[in-house]
Image (spheres, helix red, strand yellow):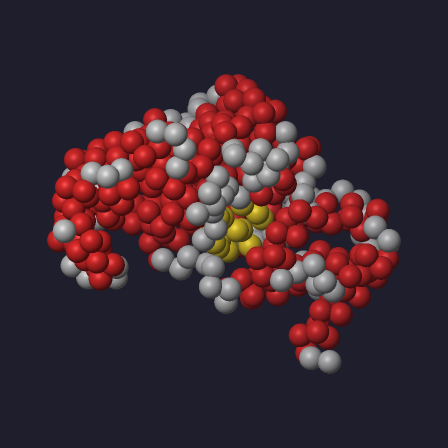
Length: 383
């Protein structure tokens, strides 16, 4: 038996033995506090420490120092006392999701950072997840599971049977989904931290409303996003957050749109491509509309609007793609790929001269294009 496996079984044993002894009210965790291994909470932390080790080598974590410093700065502004206790992992994954493990591991998907229209909206998510940690909601949920699960199932879960890097985190997040009361507690504490830090708490409700609009526009309405599967009653949450913000005294006013936009600028194209590859064009179009309405439209956003129309291929999509690509080109800050895609659409429509001009502009702008030979072949075919 490996030492890791032995350690895992010892942790499981500790969890199970402690199951009859750990009762009573659960107080919030104090800054710097770590439970003893002999406790059920200590065993739970140990399991998540192992998952964290796997996550660090998964290849999915975004390690850019500036982006990580930006997200951590927001968290530390929200509550400096717990700043050192929380490790944030920005994971490159499309869609909107975040989770908080009991040992201080916070997972933030890039889909969240992309969708946040400003710093305050991102702060609303981070504050909500931090509140789960402070109020020990994972431990409360764990004891609820322990008290309603038979020994075999409990032991399998405790020994790591459901864990495995990102899949394990998803399983953990699903199994350990919080009750509505816990979600309300996290909303309240999160909004309080926002207000005390100076962030506009009204942005929290807007975040949920944006997600609701996306889900309603989805091409696959039966396929809920990961976030909605573990954070139920979206409409209720949005309304509750709006009400709490309205009742809050000394409401903060900081939104931080410019800082947020500048920080994610170099990543946004890759993240938009991740979302586009989901091929849920209804949701993607709403996401683009929301970013545009928030004043974020530029050549890059117009390019991806064109890509969405080109790939979807419904009635009138070809012309809509041409319109979007043309607007992107006229903006002066469109990616070079705009001209390649414009050439493809124009060629498909039989407009050879326009296609040739677009392809030639692409090759001139992208001297080291990996697909240069292919585009040159297209140009030869047009002669």
